[in-house]
Length: 359
Image 1 (cartoon, rainbow, N blue to C red):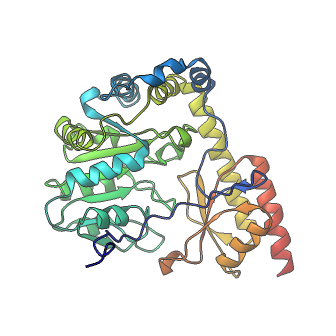
Image 2: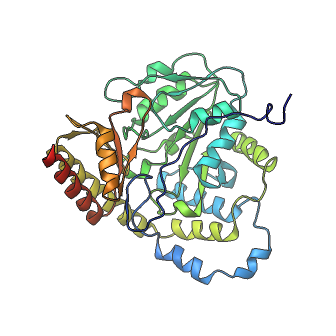
């Protein structure tokens, strides 16, 4: 038995490429092209660095309270801090959720084309899973999830396909799986989806996960959260405190609160991205691309005659980065294109026009 024979062997999640050259148009990681609220920037400027010598609040009470207040006002719910779990981005939150909820020995279910971290966590935590094929048009059919399982994970809107389920479909999945936890991952919901938060009081098996990374322009701040019933959130907290009790810094917490309090900026930023997305979708069509109706801050496009990998490689020569997935085969001819500023999208389309004209 050698030194390395007992190392855990996992095929890790591969994030989008992070080019170090600043002279690039980066449309491959679904970041928001606009800065966060000035209220967030003000918190950063005024932050007392002397606080760095102190541990942050392990309960993250200020932000948990603020999130409960925010969503109570938005959806007429009755959330309290006990219904909120905060972590280091939604990836951390989802990782804790997988460890907390999926321990029955039965396979959990998620789509075969979805966020590619789900199977990585399942493999890492030794959770059995079955992937459920999407229907034509990249649609999730709730009937496909009406079977005995250990839990369900649905990204809504789904990534990378951009397609959103209505709440009636989410509710059917919840009803058909009332004895297990159903996680609805809403990383992109603010760009046109319908949040399942309003279903929390009716379905005790529901956990909704959201993030500051996309619509709040704070991917670098690493703030994510889950909303659910008290017992489910308490179980997540117990797992968290068994791993790392101090997850968010005082600065992250203060910035998270400030962002929630600037609703006007939040709405305007989201509206700009939606407007650019709708314009970009029409431009892609003019150039011979097809894509589903996006409810996210990106488009999932395929050209009628030019292979996606060729377009991907060409754009890189122009310092324009989009996301290409080599597997699964069902999406190997698609590109995921983050919505940037109008100027960035114009540069993308100029490069595409030049390339297509040469073909």
